[in-house]
Image (cartoon, rainbow, N blue to C red; front, side):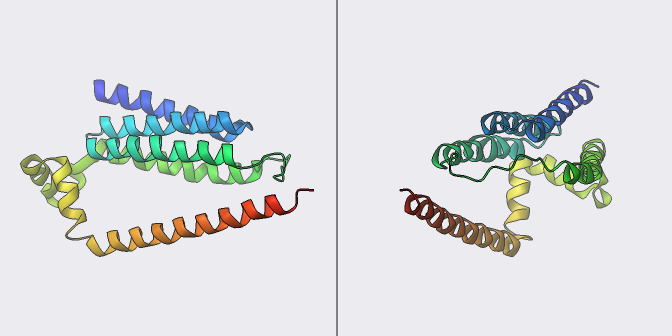
Length: 177
């Protein structure tokens, strides 16, 4: 019962933070609300018993990605960037059912957990090895090829982002009088 109350607390925190991300227009406030949402999601992972995923959420997203956003925020010359005065309210309204569906799915996974796996075979595996070892053994045996493909796609995306960033910085430097 205590875990359920903590789950509800973190879920409410994540929802409020998500609303803060989409309602504020100041980029600094948006980053702070995003950081708050990422911390709340890590708390949900910790209450669900996925300590490794919660720690990765904190290390990768809450620290690295938020710092990256701060660097981008300070590097982009906002006075030269095109600003749109309108928000995408219609897209937000249309995406609301999908967001609700994702939260329902997260609640179902939290309530059913590992016992919903076929014949409950993961429960014995987790009790024997531990959470981190199970993730590592499944990731690097059954899903090794998919893991390598995803790392290659992320590498290509990172190279593309660097190239696009170089072009945009040269564009901003070239049109100054």
